[in-house]
Length: 208
Image 1 (cartoon, rainbow, N blue to C red):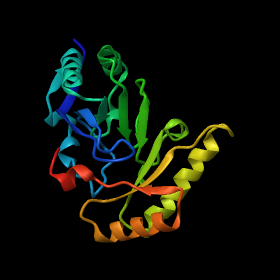
Image 2: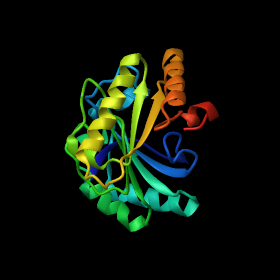
Image 3: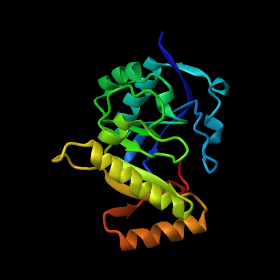
């Protein structure tokens, strides 16, 4: 029976990005070698520390969440693209829910998604394929260098797309509990209208 290593599953609200505030069912996969120092889910990094679960069980949970009000499924991590996602997406297709992917863009792209949130990292640049087709580009801000990196990623995403194709939504997200990052992101968005601010609203609300 096909399985994947899973940290947790839960039904909550999407806290970040353009879909913030919407009901969603989350599948957090284990395994990540990107190693961001400010990561708030470091417990998800070691794949072997988490149990494997059958894809059919994950799909059944997602279907139950749909009945309970979930509007879409979020596949996150860890770094979900370090796992093969074709089987999981096929299993979840029966739920009828849109499938969203949250990724740094590191790993072999797999699976079929209705929405891709790309959160690239300067020390591990994303695959060009993900830059070319992501729906939102969300860059975490901790220092001025992150703002320059965000603009470089936005320019590269635009370069990789056909001339008439719309670019991704551009978001800056301060790292949690980082006053400098928060000040930088707010000031930059005020002065650059192509960008918008993304906050981890679920943390402010005290929900998962």
